[in-house]
Length: 133
Image 1 (cartoon, rainbow, N blue to C red):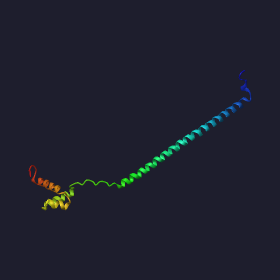
Image 2: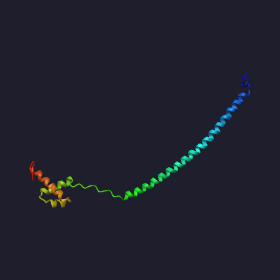
Image 3: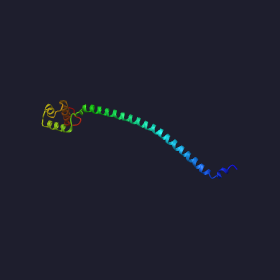
Image 4: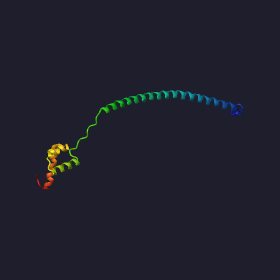
């Protein structure tokens, strides 16, 4: 029959040897492929590292430039409101004492026209509703 060679005592040893040689060939092939691909990956990683280092360096330089420029800039002064509540109450007290708008403006460091406006509003308030001055 055709299956008599399986019963030969050498056949199992030959099969194991062929299997081991095949495994060794696959192992060597795999190692070679890994070495080649590792080399590619290492080259890619090195290139990426160089690129990112250059980018980080340029960002650091730009940061230093912007820091120097920002230290030269002066923040704008906030707009000054004409009359805050404490100055308004001080101006009204001075009006009650009979001081002139010019004296009140000088004493409180306010524009004369704002003090005059406050005087007119105060006068309207004293006249009562519906009365014109």
